[in-house]
Image (cartoon, rainbow, N blue to C red; front, side):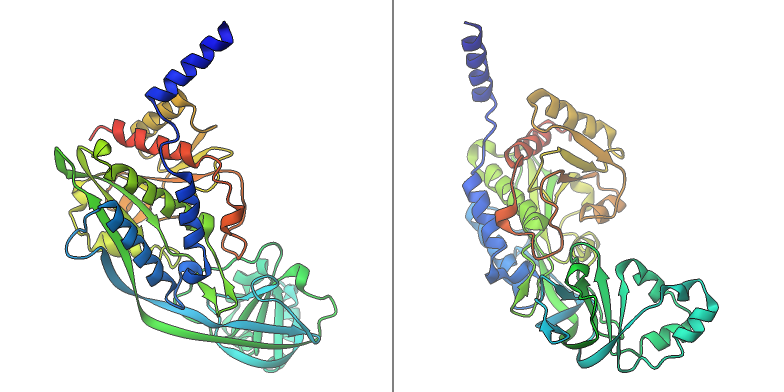
Length: 424
């Protein structure tokens, strides 16, 4: 009888507190859509960011969210360096594959041509005689090759040596593991390629390359914002945020899908919007949903919002930022957990009660996602990201199909329970 009794108790508990509240096939479809080639990495070529913003606006409209003001969009401009054609690199007559063997650095300048290889002598950083001899060379027809871990030291060379090394036709940076890139505001003085060390031949002598970029000082992008009015406390807000942008691409042949970072967080935000839009889940307080552009460019979307808020920041009772939510095997990190101990203890008690996640870990203040500009202006905020599972990050391997969504349902329930129990 005991096993049957336990089963009945479990069924009754789940009936009283449904765990699997939202539509996981719809979550998969959202992530598949946002990571597809039509959105081209949700970046700043081929209208990837604009297409993603329109998609989110349509989802807000379908869910019945209201805009704050006349539009769901909050537009702003930003500087961005764009690699507009897929880079080319040939070594000793063999073509390397862009996106797999190499990428253009985000801050690369344009350039093309042929060059012979010269390896940076790393003794130049601590031996004056070696430095003087090495930098006496003429680099103008050379491609200088050096490991990633010396990149910062190269940038900090004394002015005469730095000027010499910047006279090279091309810099090649060898990456020891995965190819990681980002978004840059402006180009460097020289073309820069980043090559996976395993793809670099030991006998490399001659190269041919082509990099095409375009610097746009006032690129127009947009945050997407919608809200659900509260039934009894409409002037008090809980805000859910996620950045929808990613790294875009490098020409037509290369794009960075950004499944975990951050189609997963965007999908979670859209699921929350669907949940709270249902009549049975209408909140007492207002809930706003903000998807930010230009997080990858330095939190520019959230910075713009905090400098130009559409409603007073003082009305935000709590903000939850959602990023990297596609895993969860090892639990979840709560950034700002130590800054807001009462709310963190509430989160822990809910997690312990329903056994949603293996663990909740906490960090202090960190400028690593869009919660940070709000925190700096006194808005209480958490940033959630899941732990374990995939390690694909800022490269072409962060694809939808490799994202496990191990604890997506559980994180959803933890968030909605936390929002319901917050003392506003």
